[in-house]
Amino acid sequence: QKEVEQDPGPLSVPEGAIVSLNCTYSNSAFQYFMWYRQYSRKGPELLMYTYSSGNKEDGRFTAQVDKSSKYISLFIRDSQPSDSATYLCAMSPNSGGSNYKLTFGKGTLLTVNP
Amino acid sequence: DAGVTQSPTHLIKTRGQHVTLRCSPISGHKSVSWYQQVLGQGPQFIFQYYEKEERGRGNFPDRFSARQFPNYSSELNVNALLLGDSALYLCASSFYSGGTDTQYFGPGTRLTVL
Image 1 (cartoon, rainbow over the protein chains, first blue to last red):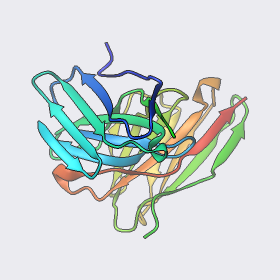
Image 2 (image 1 turned 30 degrees about the vertical axis):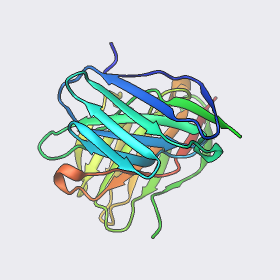
Image 3 (image 1 turned 180 degrees about the horizontal axis):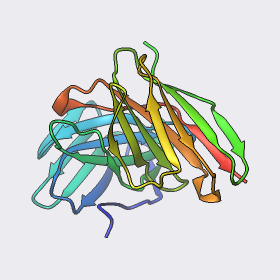
Image 4 (image 1 turned 90 degrees about the vertical axis):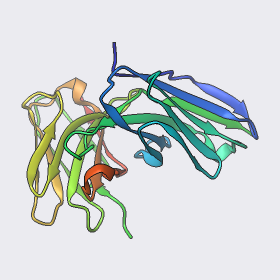
């Protein structure tokens, strides 16, 4: 079983739709949870960063972490064609105060159609 | 401020050759991490360096090595290249501030091994 599971999609939605992206994980040591956006042939760009359980909102993006279920989500409201990209979840343990080693999901390819 | 820079952008090598990839972190960042991203997969952790010392190593063979220089830039070296080494190699930098060590990724070097 992989440490982090993410449905690779692809996911295709109309402009303005609410998008829900999810990851599950098996390592209960994970404390830091991130969502990255990666455009084709580019490096990942950090979107959201959450420590432990709870919700975090930033504009049209909301990240949720449920550590009891080992489940994290990213919601995108009012999706735009410019949101079309691969979305990667990433997580790391709190090892000695450093969270340098990120474990990523496979990524979900999202297309928002105008 | 300039982001993480990597060179070269693209590289084509043949099996058995050696390759050196270079990374310059964001100004003020003291930590550099390397990741390998095979097509269709999430990035996999290779190394992390902080203050010129190796802080972590992923599950990669000894053909992979790295170092960090006094100006915090870094090199990733891969010897005896295999076809399976074809991937996007990503460098990420961070300040290393303990529990909030957010990593920022560069655009990557795309390595093709023929």
